[in-house]
Length: 127
Image (cartoon, rainbow, N blue to C red; front, side):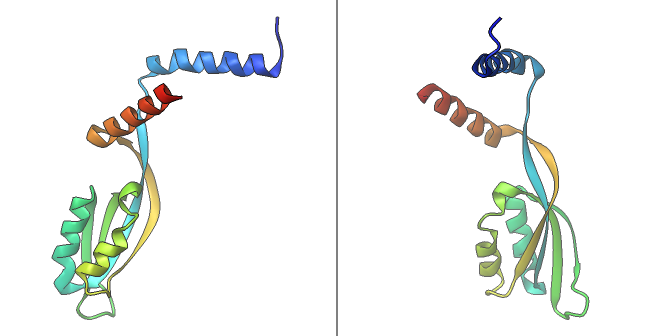
């Protein structure tokens, strides 16, 4: 019996490669709770931006103590947050802001999942 470190690593890799397809694996993506603060006249634009970025709008209220301002809350995938501030500022004449906080992990399905799987297969084939 070979008990070297390399032998255990190789055996572990082979075991995972053989077992993983039988487990019905899924891709998970981080989902954040996002709150966007914007002028009331920009709320419709912000809702459209959130929907266009796979966001799930949870609701919106007037911003307490800020007349003429709304607070929009949504769940949004982390991959869609990267340049969100650019669209928010554009839709609000530069005055809108947002905060994001991790909420949970969710299964990634559809075209985004297919693209990631295809990219990983291509990278594995090239290696």
